[in-house]
Image (cartoon, rainbow, N blue to C red; front, top):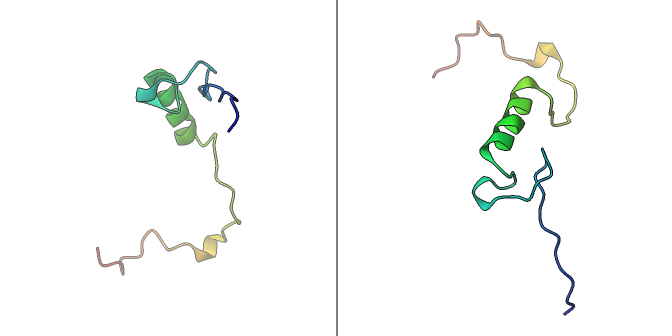
Length: 65
């Protein structure tokens, strides 16, 4: 086993050290900024394009919820 040290994790938003309560962020503020970016669509998970014809109709009432 080596004596190599593991670098401290850094917040992906502001690069400050991570706080355990807000991991992987340093604060609630940075966590909220990240969440806002997801809501605005700044982040996206890549995938294949969707053909609109393959989507269910919004007016389709055949769904038994």
